[in-house]
Each structure stands twice: as structure tokens, then as C-alpha cells.
Length: 267
Image (cartoon, rainbow, N blue to C red; front, top):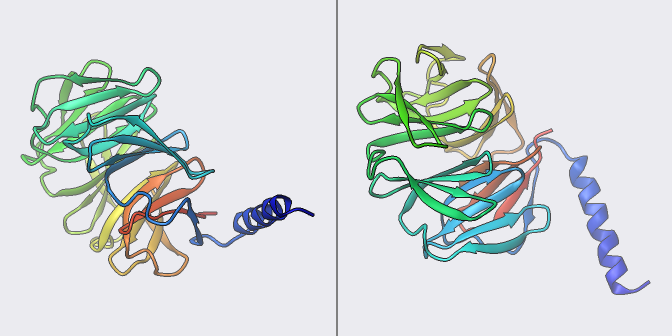
């Protein structure tokens, strides 16, 4: 049996072992540290998108670890990024909103220059194509990413929002005090989920379906059921170096502080 066949068999065995692994176990994707210069990251339809400090946009296929340049330098001022509906949405340092067509690779500004300058949290609903943003004033806005037109929702009471997530037809926020809330996208009304302050040590999160995955400062990974606010720990507390947490099709991915990409089993 030649060496190539042996390597393929070993890879297949490893993949089977990982599929059958416990929730919270993880494995490295690609070369160690290859995403070390990442300043923004997002995921869509199973593909990871990242912006380097050079402003270059890359995509990574996590099933193979193949890393491909898509654009040279347009994103050097990007500070926030999300993706959905075949678009990559970014907010720049000057507060301008840009939309990238991931099929045509067309990058264009939406709305007025600097209109999103006071954004403190943002989330894209991939089903509706609506971008939700919270301003430092506490105002919640919804933006149609097809037109760049935005509308205020509810009362200006979200100025303590730390993280914002969109799932199903609702928004979910983690506030500065660590409490989790469900927010209506219709009128901005909100109510607390779970125990008050339970997410006080959250460093970042990603939602997949009706689950929210968050990493705590002690390295613990939690899965929260968004309908109830009930959470459970996944795996060992070894995620303290997570810099970006991204949803996949049926897994989540973490880019570590050293730029290494890992796939995390959640089932």
C-alpha cells in the first residue's frame, strides 16, 4: 500500500472519530496560525470570510482548510463584518456601511457616509436580509441591506448592549451586566431570559439555529437554548484564547489568538 493511500485512510479514520466525538471537542483546520493577521471575520453558507490587516479579503473552506484571496485591499478600514443572503456586510472606521456581493464580488457603499459611526453592536438576520444595529445613544435600528435605508425600532434603551445576535425572527442581546434578553424586531420590546448576569464573563458568541454559543473568560464554552435561556457547558474549559467564534452549517469554528483555526463539535 503506497504512502498516499495510507494518509487518506488515516484522514478518513480521524474524521470518523471526530464525528463521533463528544460536544466541545475540537480539531485543527489548516496550518497553525494561518489566520494570524485577521482583524474581522464572518461566515456564510459553510464558508469563512476574513479580512487581514493588509485589507485583503480571504475565504476559507473549513472542510479542506484551503485559503483563497478574494479582494486586494478594499477592507483595510473594516471594523465589523457579518454575512448572509450572498452578501458580506462591513462597517468601516468612518461609520460607513458597505455591501459586497459574494457572487459578483462587487463592493459598494450603502446609505449615507458615516451613518453607522456610533454603532456599538450589530447582527444580521440571514433569513430576512435585515441588519440590526444599536447606537451608543441606545437606539435600535433596522437596515435593509438591499437599499441601505434604516428605520428606528422601539425606545432608545439599548445603550448598555454588549453583544447582539439575530435568530429566527428575534434579536438577542447580552448586556453589560451579563444578562441575556430577547428583543422583538417589530416594536423593540424586550424581556430577560435565564438568570440575571449569567453571561457577565462572556468574551464572544455565535448563534446557530436556536442555539447560542458563547465563550467565557475562563475558557468555558456554553450552549444556550434561546427559547428558554437554559445553558450547558460543552467540553473542557480550553477556549480562553478564542478571538473569533463563527457558526458553520452544523459546527462552530474558532479562530484563536495565534491565528489557528479549529472546528468544534457541538453534537
